[in-house]
Length: 142
Image 1 (cartoon, rainbow, N blue to C red):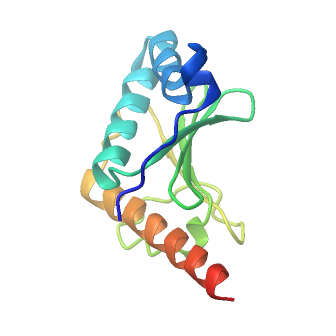
Image 2 (image 1 turned 30 degrees about the vertical axis):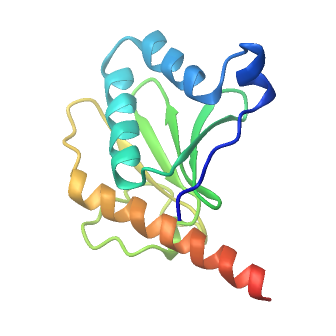
């Protein structure tokens, strides 16, 4: 099923859209973190062409599909991808390396010079989408 994103008031009035905010964040970082955030964004869009970009919590890029897939926070020494339901996802490649003690979320901290296993990351993203879709379907049928 192809989802069509409706225009928001911001888009029709010329205000910044979530995607434009993310573009600006990537540009403003101007270092490896911006490059990594852009790369992660591309991987997310390849894994889920129907992903919806959001801008929440005073400046955090968020990718959604029937719920939050993950966020893309940037800090001084790390780019952090936090998966909203990461504890429920299979991670056979061991990408999750942060927030491992929680019952719900899991995160991937990426440091300067780290290599990203794109195949494994796409699998995690697809797993998160599938989990969101099945959770939404269960709620609908309940």
